[in-house]
Image (tube, rainbow, N blue to C red):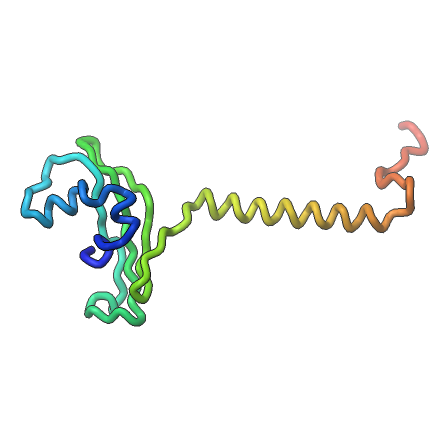
Length: 127
């Protein structure tokens, strides 16, 4: 968490006012509300302090009297801090890619049809 506290993400998400920062100053944070940062995963390289090959996953949480609410997820890989995309943004990207692919396929198919030909089936008799 020390390394993360020097990142732009820490500053952007008001890390200086966080429960983590309070604990670093020796303040007991039990019963306090606010932003906190927690390590949720660290591989063996990270646990022994090796930067090369290390992977640490952190999560920002909002703590209140009612519990905690998970927010952003960050990961530190090989000494570089990244903001993890949300599930919604990953799904939105996948849906956008699929939509563009379908549009391209549709345009490709309609370009192959002779001029004026309709792709809809023609009903030749009524039931």
